[in-house]
Image (cartoon, rainbow, N blue to C red):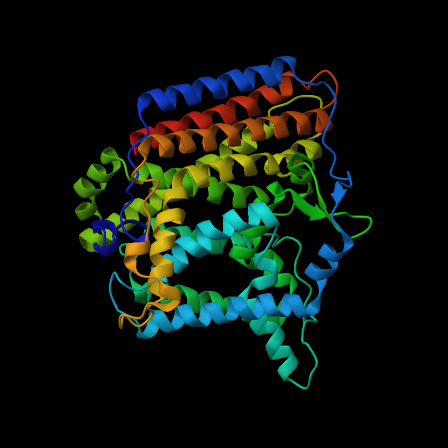
Length: 456
């Protein structure tokens, strides 16, 4: 057993990161690539839109779509996810009530980072396996065999994704800003509140509530816009296509930009919060926050800074999207939402750059703990702590390369998507100058991300 596996729960509620800061040389190389790519795209790239969400893609064999759409297979997948959830809850309630409990790893690593990894490959998987959706369906069937999916009220359009934004912020707050992210009690209260809010909302607004308000479903659907697999709109069959054709299909609703701001801003804050400068600031000023004590004061300072990061991302992106001429006031107001999908590659790249080692290494630890949920020495599936491989932590050069590559590739794809969308939205004569502010903003996000990885 390694020191990381057996140590005290620290950051993220699953132990401190074993990542070393990215060396300055790697950060500078990544910054140079980001600047060069941005200049090349703006200066010499194509002058008419190339990506089209209506492109059919290359359809997979019909049996693939039939299998995915099969009610039996869908119920099997949903039931397996529900059973896994029940197993994790057994471990949470009756397992070791300390750092050896599997719940923080399931909650922060397998659910948060793992959901992004799966969704970016196969699509919005949470929509199919969500335990709260499954409970909702089962509760409808149990009342006389008639599903209660019909809403008592129509979901207000002005709500948009704002309930999901609140849920996403509540999650990242618990993980990054609360006084004890590893507290089993706090995680259980969060999960219970989530389940109650989801089921009560669905009772009022029907299944639309999950699509708009479930933070994990909105998160999964958002990152799935980069998935190579999608539905052909005309035939309904699953097809393989260019993710850049798929990105613009992200719906534009109230709160769309806020979703992206929470995802990007919270990940950036996570890097910043691990810097010595910020830790020293919190240590020096937490006791000065009135009425809350040192731990409460530290949580307040982290919360305010987290919120500041989110607001800065949202405001800078909205200002950059609107910084163009040749459009009406109504068109200008719509531009941030219609450009928001261009942030998805940057978000995904930064998530993997920051959390990949957590997924690979803490994920293994979590699976091993789930193989012994009650802490009685079980080794289900022949898994034991010695099976955990810390391949990334033991190969820092590989890890640094992956981190910088994720940030730079995410920036590259985001810049390309933004350029193509600008050609589609901006009038002739403003297409070059009108996208400069957005390109500079994206460069600023990427350089900041590289700096935080270097300084974290």
